[in-house]
Length: 268
Image 1 (cartoon, rainbow, N blue to C red):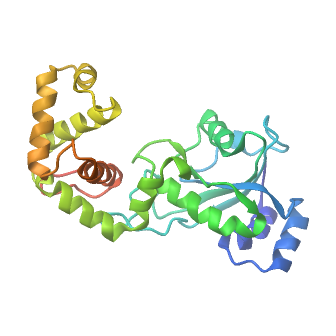
Image 2: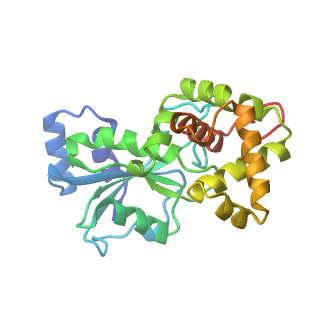
């Protein structure tokens, strides 16, 4: 893993996208990288840990090049306003960016290594096949970063967060979705709203089992059932109708990711 102004100068044009073939060739030579290979880009929302910047490949054989800090890579506004909704700390500030020539285990291992080192929040792009595609990979990694829970230290791969990535990529539609689906819910006092949201999250995480959700929440199953029925009445959507359930799940993601106050009652 390497870092420094030389690497940043060579990686910068590639990560910006639209690099000419001769620029790609010069960067490949200067960095000692093949023009074609299995690459991913990592974008961190906090400074990279010192342990992550070391010479030589990691245990998977992956090779890392840290290009230093740059501006916000996602470019998306949040459903609630002007800032991105993800869990990236220091929102609107610098991001740490790395190019990874992947080993056999692929991007999953790269994400796991960053978690082991205590990095995060961070986003990892899908695999691309050449240095010329690093610009697109950087944008996708930045979008993945925006799907991290606020305040978290998550390292997430874009392919694990595609629905949420769609939401953060179209903030104006996300804002409309939240208002349309959860509008009445957002008028409740924070304690009531949190209780219904927590119950819905538990029910979803338990695969739609009221009994298991009740055990997780430490309450009677009838309590869970009653809360869910109230949620259905407030949103005018049924948990038993797949298309309406999709609306509720996506609105829940917007609410989770939003850094703006969630309605008249206060924080989201």
